[in-house]
Length: 213
Image 1 (cartoon, rainbow, N blue to C red):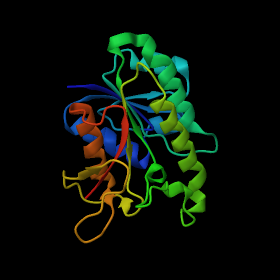
Image 2 (tube, rainbow, N blue to C red):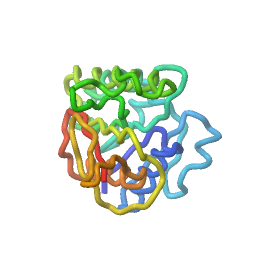
Image 3 (cartoon, helix red, strand yellow):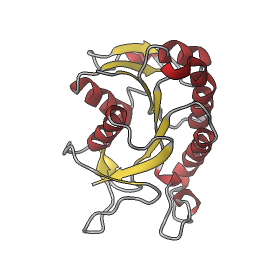
Image 4 (cartoon, helix red, strand yellow):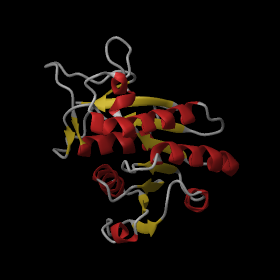
């Protein structure tokens, strides 16, 4: 059993991750910045109010954790990069007991067949660009960090939403995973499986990876 802190636990992705962790018997601290959302968290989780960009919150919750999952949704402020900066500032102070960080990234950080980041392409959704660029900054922050164990997991750029939990997926590193029919996608349920798998059996230490069916 692992002790897992999930920031953004009431969101579409965070809720799936929380449920998957509980299903596997892990001890989950489910965190939301908004007290009203805390009340909606899974009953079997230890629901608390907190902010992943607060050093005090991270210090308090990370001390007893084996893993910290960052699954916060995009907001007006650059929450992803600020979350990463907070974590890489606080966690090294915990020494060898510092938890693993698994950060839910953006498909925009992935690359096309020409090596261009998806967020930089002309057909990348304009409404998602600000959030994706924030995730790029977060990824750069992790990559430049010392004394932090982390993995960033990017969803596919298409067909990512609630669906069937198959419990199976394939992984990639820089490019979206494409199946035999040329399709890209994964359910949020199977994405959550991949997140908890990474916590139980880390295979992508200090890098960004992606998953798909």
